[in-house]
Image 1 (cartoon, rainbow, N blue to C red):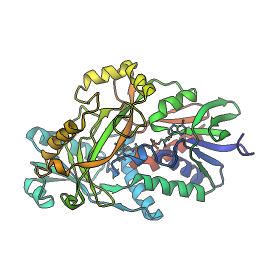
Image 2: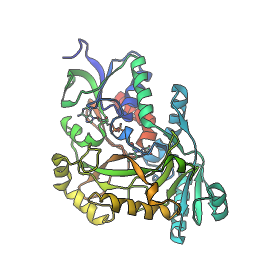
Image 3: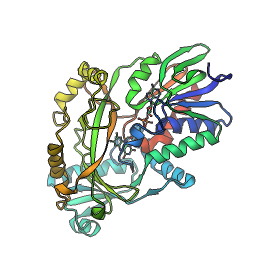
Image 4: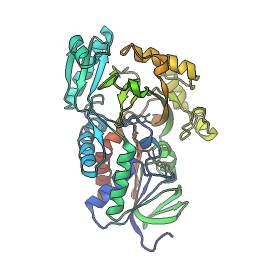
Length: 400
Ligand SMILES: Cc1cc2nc3c(=O)[nH]c(=O)nc-3n(C[C@H](O)[C@H](O)[C@H](O)COP(=O)(O)OP(=O)(O)OC[C@H]3O[C@@H](n4cnc5c(N)ncnc54)[C@H](O)[C@@H]3O)c2cc1C
């Protein structure tokens, strides 16, 4: 058993949600003995370190859902945390641009949803849009002045530093292999030894279903990886837009569409798309992990989902086809972007829980046993929402 004392809490996963959860436990009860275990070489090495870096305002999410509530609170909490801990963020604001009358109708529906979520938005017409973004074309747009950008991996690193400063430990290269719960506690076997704790929280992202199964949680969903490819614009084109520029999302799809995003370090990224991933954690193009392919290929929910959403690619596109597809999508609202402007940029892989009937789990999903809490579905905007998710998880722990 690693260490002599029995821990109060072991957290599996040093992504932004796991680290925020460990920190919140230490803030609520200073002096508790907390260890965070992660199989990666560094904190934030999975989804937290491969995303769009957007501090979402909370526009899109079903009113009353955890996503809506925790994203609005999380945007504020993230900005405060960054200010307090010296993490750079910017607030360029965002424009959701409608390019056809049908999109204008959908944009109005989106504005009503945002209002129900208490999100500040301004509707702008064609002329005002041209003033705000001279190189963007559209019939109308929604302006979200509070949408921001940050590097969530830096937020994760700051959270990890704060966990350690408060007396917790963060152990990397420590894959959790087994979890055993009994009346006396939870015992975890990992690559860095065994840990006994009062309670366990798992925030395992792309491995959430597998880790939940290790903990004996009844799992009625499967994590399916959706790859998101990005490009970046050349440095000399980084003034093409000032705001984040988003299309009006297709309500039938769980992803927001290819957008132009100024990053916190002054670049502009283009992306991401959403294609079924052939590896949960293989970031280079062409990565294949047979176990991961078998996981969705043998799952009836995946095929039901694929039939319903034929437009979500089931295979990675070849590089030139992908570039052509991106240009088609981006030129709808920013016609001056050309093929030579799309430079390589690292991809991300989303963990999306799918039910057996093919329905993507839309909201954050948390499952518990007597001594464990598993964050089972934490897709976007969970990076923005991590601090309030941590509050929710700690509330569940204290009730058990
Ligand atoms: C392409 C893309 C774009 C996105 N854009 C945004 C955005 O702009 N804004 C936003 O708010 N959200 C965005 N998201 C979502 C956001 O990145 C995630 O919701 C968030 O990072 C989830 O954090 P997490 O800690 O739950 O998971 P992760 O960051 O995936 O962390 C899980 C951790 O668990 C560890 N782990 C797994 N299994 C084990 C095991 N057995 N033992 C030990 N450790 C284990 C992994 O190594 C990993 O570090 C995006 C996601 C993607 C992929």
